[in-house]
Length: 140
Ligand SMILES: [Zn+2]
Ligand SMILES: [Zn+2]
Image (cartoon, rainbow, N blue to C red):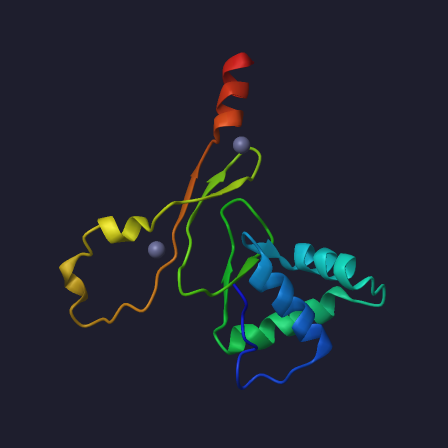
């Protein structure tokens, strides 16, 4: 799927690079991962990590990206907000992120004390151990 440049955001080459990487990413990425991807794609060795952070905060101000700090990690991960949002099961051992096939929230009745609150979104991550790490445990 091709993403249109978001209206209302000044277009710079650096922002375009971050935009391209984020909209093509299969899963949430840290600023460092975005940085390495951008450098690998552009072959531009003058890139600085601070440039990536600046572009990210511009997108964040416009509510275009989701910033999450996953349990047990120091660095935040960033994901482009898509119409079809995703959730991940994250392995506590190898940090693999496995996308869930559907949104679990669709199956969870929301408690009714939220009459005075309009829900516009949610965040949810599942933690545990992936198949590979489970069998490793058994062998040890
Ligand atoms: Zn694992
Ligand atoms: Zn959901």
